[in-house]
Amino acid sequence: MSTVKQKILIVDDEPDILELIEYNLKKEGYQVFLANNGQEGISIAKKVHPDLIILDIMMPKMDGIEACRLMRAIPEFKNTFMVFLTARSEEYSEIAGFNVGADDYIAKPIKPRALVSRINAILRRNSSADEVSDNKVEIGDLVIDREAYLVYQSGQKVVLAKKEFELLYLLASKPGKVYTRESILKNIWEDSVVVTNRTIDVHIRKLREKLGENYVATVKGVGYKFELS
Image (cartoon, rainbow, N blue to C red; front, top):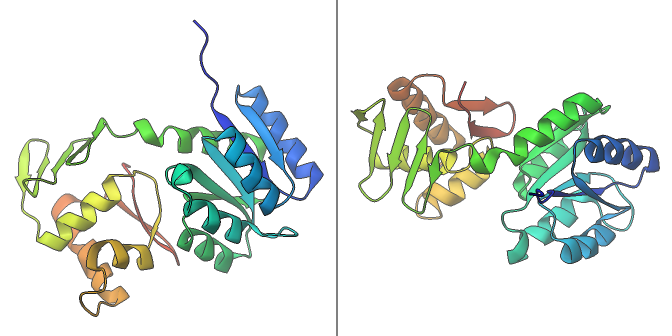
């Protein structure tokens, strides 16, 4: 029985980078498509519907940030994984990327084995949770029941305040995805109250006190993600 190969679109204006990534991902068994700028990337993505898109930040005609922002506004790309290539000195670009909907980033210079390992891990995220439905997440030793607003850890009930629960559910529903503080505010608190970054940090600290340090990881300068360690 043949296995359907997952599709990856690489968008970069440097031929050497395209060739390096294409070679290593094809060797891993992926279908690979190439684009030289953001505009071309969007056009190809609409045709091939990739499972994951790798975007460089700085490109002619349309940069990766703008391309990601535009694609996230298209319903068919709402759940497509998007990963940025960034230089180590471009922390501001990483933050901008997460703000427009990036799932992760890969630092340059590119190390082929590390790149393939990261891509494999990202594409496994859909199956990281034992079960993720509209109302329940089961992952590791946690069961998070949104309908009942209950959390069980190794079968024991954990009492969380309403916003603590909503924050945990948001992070755990997409393991490994980095949520910026801005996106957490939008998803959890919306525009109903004035909330500062300090409020988010306090809720994260309370989650760690009640569940332990092994679930919520800090991404320095960006935000938080759910990660079983």
